[in-house]
Image (cartoon, rainbow, N blue to C red):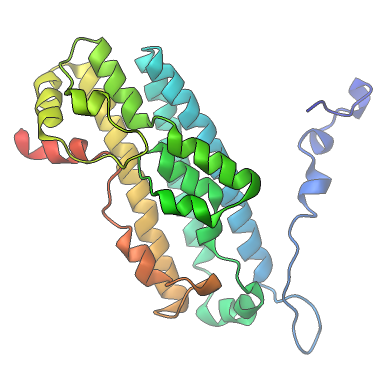
Length: 270
């Protein structure tokens, strides 16, 4: 996409970042029965979730780069960008602090206007789960058009874990064949033989550092899930979620579901 600037004088902060266009994207759907104006807190709700989607876009951008770096054995570069993703995840958690300044009554003032809209419909978050190895074929059916195509591509594509396993193999580790040549469309599952290979190599500080950073990533995602569950419980309690979802009850089932289970299982081996 080319920028529509004929000369440098037109190249400003505002039009480079498309700020005027950006500020028109917060379109409230609620209205106060007395004033006819949107409910005050809906703007915060929209902005927080729009920012989440922007951060999801950046995380996917980073993770694709990390996979490429691992595939080319550029471990240091991959690890540096993993650390960037960790900082972004911390930012996502911090944004929940802002959202939690909204009381249950304030959310209820516009919640009914959201109709079938739900966070479950975030295609980018499903993409993130898929690229980390948390795959479920049925979720693709929740989306159509370009979103469905993106998710289908992620479903068929090797994950961060597969890139990590490839690095190990190229460095001479005896990676179990069923791990090295696994069906990348399936979720990553524990493998005791793989765990033994990882433990054997942990004396290599560089290798151990990469493993720990991947574990940090996994923990960061789980931390965000936990805080998200607690925010939902705090806001709507045990009510059904928007869009007919099970709300906090469903979100709680996603807790403690690691992306890289072998990196957690090895902790008992030391």
